Length: 284
Image (cartoon, rainbow, N blue to C red; front, side, top):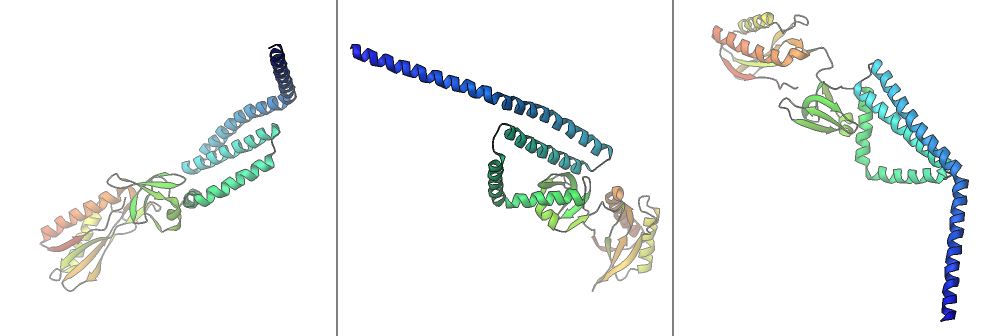
């Protein structure tokens, strides 16, 4: 039994001695490494404060120069994350971690993510193109990819459209930037193309004069460019008149509706029979 206790005491002494060595090595390592750790933490704290200050300053400058809000947000966020990445690389480099291998790992990860998210990257690139070249902006009425609506928000991956019946449509920026876009708000004024179909028994000149009178008396129809009423088509049984008034974008929808209504009333008073009324699709 005495031999057993002696062996136990030797093991305990060995464990204590080993633990003491580990503590000493840890303290020595901590003392040797503490300047790097402290300097890295100082760089991190000062860097975060500087990034926040620079980001606020840049956003104020863009706001004073009245840049597009979507472009300002995109540039501000891009600058913010770029500075954060550079600060992180500087921080780990100050800790003594080899940055070349770290950057290689990030490159491999980025390549794998890029291959798996090709569609999202296409939408991202499309969003960048839309923000930079501005084929439309928030508040514009556009038609694209078979849908029409008012642009409510331009995000980096999708564009949000709100239709006339208050439905929200998300259009991916990839196909949006590569497709045909009709921007109804780009010009100050917009011309309507309203179609009336009358019978061959109706005097065309009389019908044109009646509609022109309606257009001349309407307050929302612009005098310049001048409105026009033309024969658009002659079918087997009817004559199709095209009414082409101009209006400001803000008044366009209401103007079309009122011109159609007043023209119909004027035709009724003149005893002119309308075979069919076809109104252009009003996009907004």
